[in-house]
Image 1 (cartoon, rainbow, N blue to C red):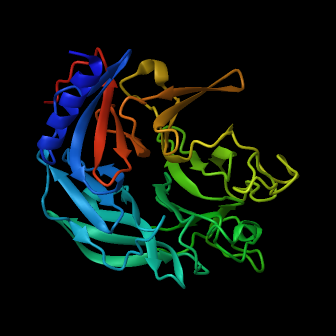
Image 2: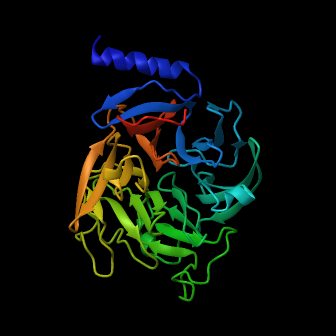
Image 3: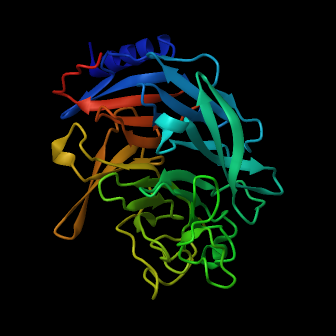
Length: 378
């Protein structure tokens, strides 16, 4: 039997087992194996693990799915009809409140509105059994826009319990990324109830929106907080080239569109500058573009040799990029290309394995473990 035929048979087996954990190995490579963990998802976007071993998964059309007791629940935990599911819009991220064990609060990011006025929005609700209840809006990006692209719409809690939200530039409004009176092209910081922290960097600046934490972003679709250092990091899409990994610090200007390593989709130059005074250079930039989405960092994961390395899912590249730093230089490695699927989300689970969410009509969650790893949780 050829390797191609063997892989096809294994993938067919994966499709036939609805919403289940599959112990059979789907793809193997030196150093790791990739298994289907959850299947039968429709355009999944993000995953968050629950303390009881289950998980919540967002689907772009506005459904929140629950994975519990080894199976995908047939009925969604929530259906959010107000979600604006068009082009790049939809239901995107899901994160748990830092005190979820006490309050059961779940936060969801996505887009709401219509073709003429839409925006990045954050909702929160309470998970009661298999249902999300008491859903309310805690954030709406200002101003609304009339484009169907560049929402950002990722979430991450800082160690102080405040929430970071990425907001894209809207595509046609890139100059707003340098305008502190607009949230377009920024990362926002709010309290868990939607109010503004007193120590945000632009609270006292006239004409600036107090929610803004950093600005000069294009379309940040990856956002994470290091659970060891408490530092925030984001990946963002460049135009044609110039995708970035950035260390996010309060008050910083990350340059877009004053400085970029990319060019416009027409080939025209956006700016003559790759660096610009007063702006922050990326830790890493990808040219040509690989379209980075989800982002996480290995902290106590199943690969000790990867400790401290970043992992960014790629849409165009259909891979995950491992980024490490040594002696002040970045090193990149392409991984997990075997499935040949766009990778929308990347996260290390509580078991130390790496979980990948694939961006397909029939999407799935993949579980990556070291090839030599013996799973004692089954």
